[in-house]
Image (cartoon, rainbow, N blue to C red):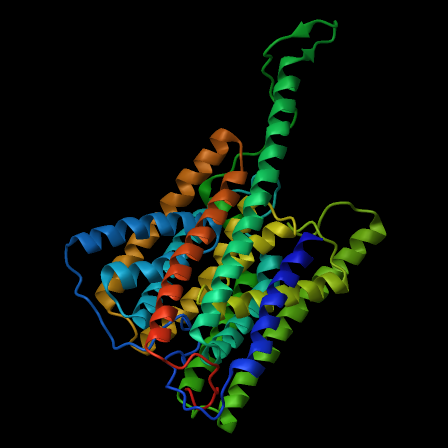
Length: 460
């Protein structure tokens, strides 16, 4: 199964990292303080002083605006956010320090994902009478992703810079290539389907056996046209939104309280461990629901899938999805990508259509990015004027990016374009973040800086 190969791919990278601890860490060597102790902060950082350029009209601001527009538009359409593009852009072009750039990147992702979600809520499902956002999958993956992100950020305190760079290159190139080949497969299937539809339209025979050419006809049962407000109300599931919001609020409160507690103290670990029951309760609730519905469907002989995923919801597949969610969140927290770079390709792998995969991934990403933004605001990690400006750019790009790409998909009849955009964003992120990481690692080697693993408590 393709999804199992993806998970094995991720697990192999983690295995190499964990084994490296025994050979490359030096517990007796003095470690410099790590700047990544704040939960949900980007771990892909270096120790630098706070640098906040002024918001003024210049070529740097113009170039950053253009990159922000393109990155937000493509990132939200692909369902991956675009953090791998924003952080290098804000550091290399605008001139922010890496910690502030990571915080501003989360602001941009939140703005783009929020506007994208608003657009998607006003769009009907392309083929079925169900919401375009799959709330079942959102409830299944969101708590595990948030839990994984907190674990990943904790690991980022320990992992050396060069290893994070290696993981970025391996993960992003792997998921990008897999998504690209997935897009090629979908393109071929769409081409075959379009040819079949053309043949059906050109070879319609009437009741007297006469061949009709280019005959236009209306379906016997036309699809009911709904207003934007009707579609919006249909796409909103308030009960599930409330559950997702409660999970979001619980994680936020735990992180805010934990930031005021001494690192590695008893209360610190109590608050850290409280995240597990919250995530497991919500995940367990949704897992049991999917399992029971799957058993009911099998007993009645119903062949229709329960949600957008085409897999059977057996206990093994449910545990498999839990593992994928934790790994995706851990990788996202470790690399500072928020999990979208893993969730987007993963949803495609389990059979979710590109439209729904993009909408659902962006929806989940809105919660994780907003969680980071609220905490960064409380920690005063970014300048408010620049954050508002970049969020405004991302809001416009997220909305109109969805609008133009979906219009293009509708005209061409090729949903595989969404998959190619997803693959392209991940590949560009691999080049930008990988390039910056390699350059920084070389500089650290030349300066004879410590390149091993750090101790968690002493490096906070």
